[in-house]
Amino acid sequence: MPTKASEARSSEARTRAEASFRKEERAKDGAKAMMEYQAHGRIVREKTAKLRALRLAKEAAEKAVEPTKKTAAGKV
Image (cartoon, rainbow, N blue to C red; front, side, top):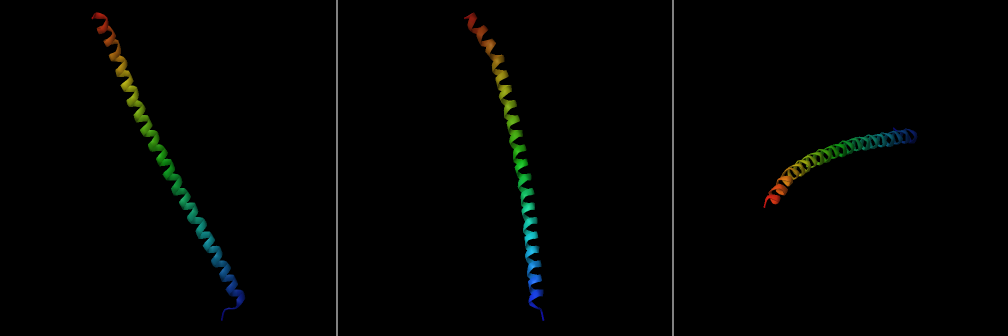
């Protein structure tokens, strides 16, 4: 038959085990959140780089067309 002392020890052990489990779960959740955060940041940087390249290409094309318009306007 269990005594009060052994019940108290098992209760304390259970409490420590549950606390340890919760701590491990928080660590796993934190690691998962960090990976998601880093992945999101990488995606944003990739999209930004792509949009920047498109904008620069568009600006370069507009500059190439601009001198042609000026020379054509001067001839008229």
